[in-house]
Image (cartoon, rainbow, N blue to C red; front, side):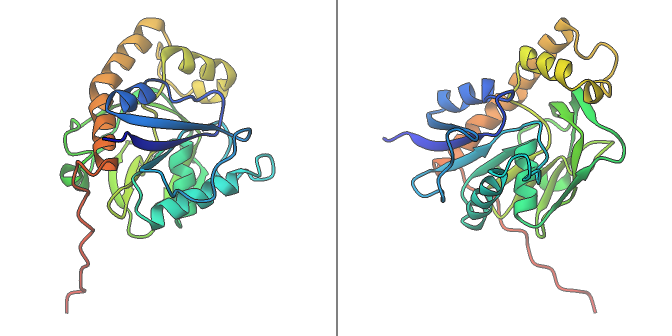
Length: 251
């Protein structure tokens, strides 16, 4: 049986695949990592079973400083149009949202940073990737931009008290998560040192070594099975979500 091929786009050196990459490979995936902009990306997703786009410090439409972002958005749009199993993480989710008709802005309630929780929405309970997550999954936040509006027909899967659009699904196999699940304590400490204004939004003690160690143990317990399910979805071993039912206006 051939391995499940996943194209992983890394927009920023500061956000590697980390544990997420390990969880995917242990579930049988073969990762092809493209570090931007040096490695470039293909024009389409032919030959891949899935696509993942990781996070980064730039804005989703910061094309002046990072002109290759337009290529990443085009690739995500093509993956979404083909309903290829796709996962956008933080910036990756924002790029996916913009590429498919959503809107990303600077959050008017300030950044989200540090370990936290999100709350599953109704659609998550019947979603193949999200159904088995706890009601309040542990996540790691570190962002100042937010997804203000989701693409049309997107299903909202998770929210936080500060910002509503924390996780969503397009079609049957295309996902975006505003938070991080791929970090290590060292990665987070580097972010906090280099983005002081964002880090200042975290609770007191959020970046203490014992706090980060415990939060990453919680992340692994919650999101390692999620990563395995994503590989199963890409390998067609897991049934995708049902399409959002069309509703007629009441008369």
